[in-house]
Image (cartoon, rainbow, N blue to C red; front, side):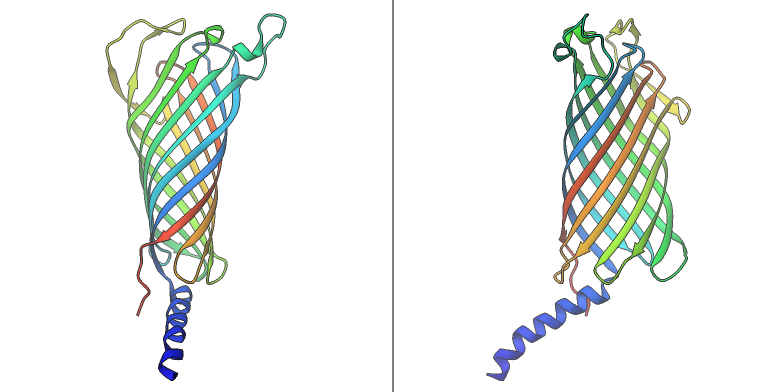
Length: 263
């Protein structure tokens, strides 16, 4: 009888020990969220479009808050954007819209550079991104399809983490690509005049994407956890389309633990 009682007690102690001594964490991250997006394609139209949609992401997180933080994530979102300012006497706003699809692959690696305390730490490192954006304008909304493609962007990343208690963490990271290899098309009045593919190297001044990630994590005793995050990003491309895209998205996610309890 004593042996039977010792089994669940041993399991409880092991999971509690994992929650209290957890320093390293490897997990799969699955997110679903609601996004708000703003679009201003000054080359096509002076009209600013805005709307809401849905997004999701899958990723892998490897953290050692006393040493480093790294994450790789594949995310996608879709939204229907409507004009913010339009004269209803000229057009029916329902007929003027933009369908927007965005896909991003992102990798971030940061290393601890300073700790203010045992709970509050700063990180710095680098990031890499691949971005694809497709926007299909309605016939009355210039009737064109725009593609925003960054085959590879390399840049800097920085962030901080604050350990609220044994089970909860708060984090913030900012990614700033400095050099990008992008796809360009030649436009005239919003219409592509050259079908051939053209790629060029773009610097921070002509193509930039600023991405931030603010999150709160709560871990269970078995190492799985929940994450609520707010992501904001803005793309500014002045190479050919003179386009600015701003995106806000609130994610609700689950962390599937891949780490074993420490002995």
